[in-house]
Length: 235
Ligand SMILES: O=C1O[C@H](COP(=O)(O)O)[C@@H](O)[C@H](O)[C@H]1O
Image (tube, rainbow, N blue to C red; front, top):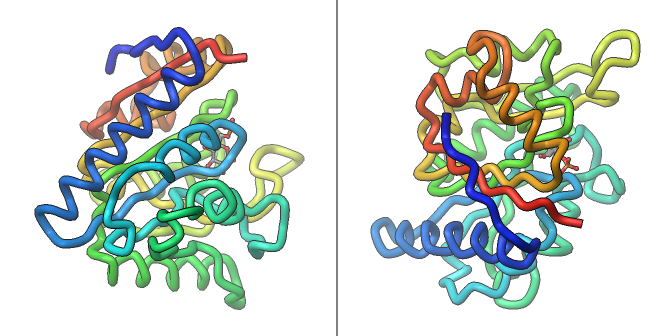
């Protein structure tokens, strides 16, 4: 299992994550003339996004998307796109192109198909990825016990975006979602899992040793996702 890299402060941790992402984007622009980045929503990534926004990059050559999204428009406080727009796509980074997963399609599955086509048009491979993880062990919108988990984690599927229904009887997720699948993470140049707090460290260590068939983190490791795990106790 990938070793956990420990950082003494939130600043050091956010800086390390942002500088690896910026370095990957810069290398992709040099090699291909463009770069594709995918990141999470949630409460964890804001300090990383704020630092990444300050990176000296040819931002007009960068496309930014999400690893997952709630099926809500950007006007909703639940929207992951809103976090990206407010914190990452600011200053010079506002020149980057945002590729949303959400669209007001008829169903979440139709929106997933639209998003999958949009990502294919961007090259279909993430140059670098930032991941978060919930305390229940979910990454992207790959929720333990969700009926969609097995499909999202099927290693033989091509990179795509899938609709995720709400959990039954109050189980997570509470609303419909969209999520990239395992293949998108397995084919990425680098995947940084940014963890904050003692509880998430314990979950990671437990999940990483778990059953590779059912748990997202274990499945990522089994599939050879180029995972780097950066942790800070945080505040
Ligand atoms: O639902 C989500 O949660 C995870 C983790 O969020 P956090 O608040 O614990 O940082 C996030 O990675 C994911 O993108 C988001 O949709």
